[in-house]
Image (tube, rainbow, N blue to C red; front, side, top):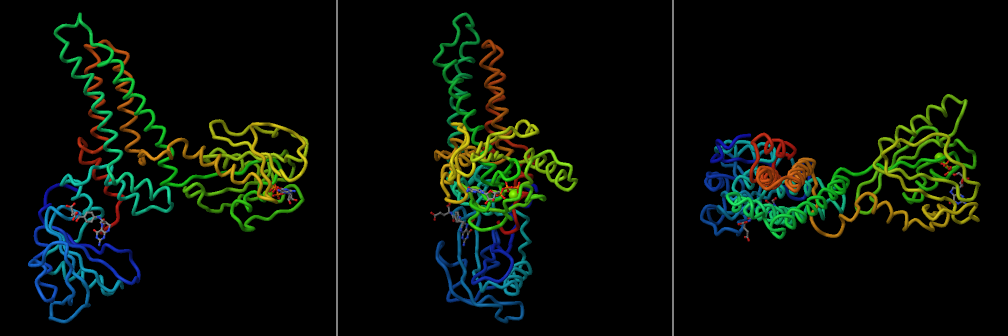
Length: 439
Ligand SMILES: Nc1nc2c(c(=O)[nH]1)N(C=O)[C@@H](CNc1ccc(C(=O)N[C@@H](CCC(=O)O)C(=O)O)cc1)CN2
Ligand SMILES: Nc1nc2c(ncn2[C@@H]2O[C@H](COP(=O)(O)OP(=O)(O)OP(=O)(O)O)[C@@H](O)[C@H]2O)c(=O)[nH]1
Ligand SMILES: [Mg+2]
């Protein structure tokens, strides 16, 4: 995607494929109004309509036949989504109608929009920064309340504002260092050197802490239930889901193959994975299930380690994969406890006791403190830029003034990349390649 040809007029169906009450065809660019004038019959021409007003009328084909009746919405540059002249046709929402309306706009000189091209134009015109454009994508794809909230916050420019604050801290030190380069013996005072950089590093670290949460919210998280046979894994899965998804019996070794079920937990789309109970076994089928369970634990974002609270406690016969985040769960809390461990959450699948606490612990593990309302880093691209900025700030903290300047300039470059003020075209292309046509 290049900047050339931006002046030309693009058109696309903006609503989802399939039948719906209403569908939208959107046209943006210099010719948008004249294209609309030639395909819409109403009490006045779209180009003569006050911006922000709509017209009711007929969308006309080349043979002067009516394609559909509908509404025409007129925007005038720069007051539109793309900051260009924009016209929208709101029609009956069938693919048959929408494809004819689009075809008519193309006949009259518009060209089909590429994926994300409307939002790309909003970005290139400066109406949105790159973080806001990514937030648009998050909103379009939001499959949970947390992802929605995060997208809305991102679109508001909250993250961009925070990144600018960090940039100001770095600039303060850089300016102080540059001002004193000719008089190195004086040294930069702490309030211009140590303090702003410590604040910048802390804020970047906090943003990076939100990255895992941001990605959990957008991509979803995998939660594996692991434990010995009869620990109550399948029962807990069913209790969390609220329906009997997994077979439960009193016979140890009931679950052999793993099983997945989706639900929304703490606003995050979560896939729960029930696994075979882990034990030493001569049964080849069960042994395969045990191996698989350990593999699943290694790939999960979070592992719930379940132990039967009503039976004597015994360690698992194998080690769980290193690196996974774990929550320790003591099951069957409705029965007398056979052991006590303040680290373990007591839960009953039968009475539901402890389930709210378990959900809260999962929320804390997946989202950390990121839920306090500020913006999060929600893409790997953003996290990568923040990580590099932090690395340069930390390098500058450790270097003498004459060498720190270079690192601070690099930190500012990484921050500018984060918001998209200083990025290569291929980075922009990669962001917009994830969009659908019409957005
Ligand atoms: N029908 C329709 N609904 C939609 C969109 C759209 O393009 N069309 N949007 C698209 O994703 C979102 C809304 N986003 C928009 C953002 C800015 C402007 C706009 O015209 N801004 C002008 C004027 C602002 C004003 O009048 O106060 C501006 O910023 O100058 C329009 C839509 C969601 N709903
Ligand atoms: N009283 C009580 N019994 C429970 C609870 N959870 C599970 N059980 C019982 O414990 C037994 C084993 O439960 P499951 O959920 O099948 O255990 P599992 O960990 O999936 O076992 P495997 O699939 O064999 O590995 C069943 O008889 C359940 O009824 C609980 O919270 N309270
Ligand atoms: Mg089971």
